[in-house]
Length: 376
Ligand SMILES: [Zn+2]
Image 1: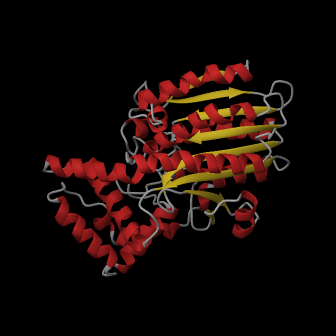
Image 2: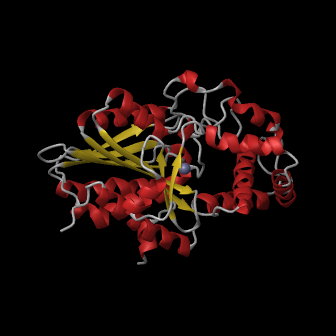
Image 3: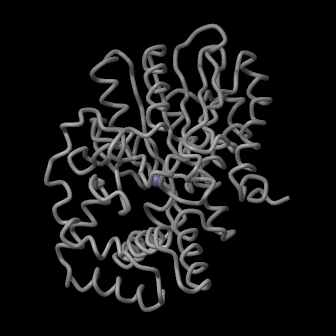
């Protein structure tokens, strides 16, 4: 069997089943390991699954792997978790290191191949530390052009609508609109509950649950090493490590330290409610003595060109419209879903092979640098 066939799954149940079975390998090194299952949302069988164990004799550090914050992106996250267990587990000192692996933070989204939750919430815009920190004018531009981002009618002819979106977004005809959606992409928007990049009006169950794990690990370990799996951003077929500005190192310095080509830092000023910043903030305010390394790992799909950016926005907008309004033609529905999959979970062999290769690179460099992997 090809490695990609072994690791990549095509349904939420299949992915979860594979994950749950990892407990057997993990118990060989961490006999106390347990599987925790938490139901999320309105359907009982959508669960966040966590495999957790303390270190055998001491809790010097903990490895924290999270996946599926953006539903559909969880398939790749789960693949990387599985790869880690198969190839790297033996290099972790289970006597001194705790382990916490999380499958599908947004299980409904993963099951239904959407990025957002069943409440249309982008979970990575839903971790607000102080609710007052969201500026009131955050969605000014988005509001001005919201009919573009949120057409309230059925998709009638996807080729035509796609071309129109490209034109509107690219020609700068809707300059404010473009900056509005760009801003919404990073800041989230908190007014239009059927719109794209919606951050929600209250805390999602998934965020609540994950915060309890963040808090537990920061409280019980002096060192927390966190990797969060995502897809779409960054150069095609490559991994990009995204870190918060709370990490004081320069990008260049980090590239050298981790021997990684693609490292991006983002500032909380441009992003609201993301889980990594929340984690850092919690660290700083309540557990200042704990060392926290937390990074997103993005496996790139469309690329980084301006054309790729337009394709991304168009895909996100059309998929959202399809979800809320439907499409007149079945072939248009299929096209949009396929394009959405191309963006977040491509089935091309080349991309999947690249994920495995790049994941090894990311895991090895970060976990070696952070002292989790012990080289013989
Ligand atoms: Zn993501």
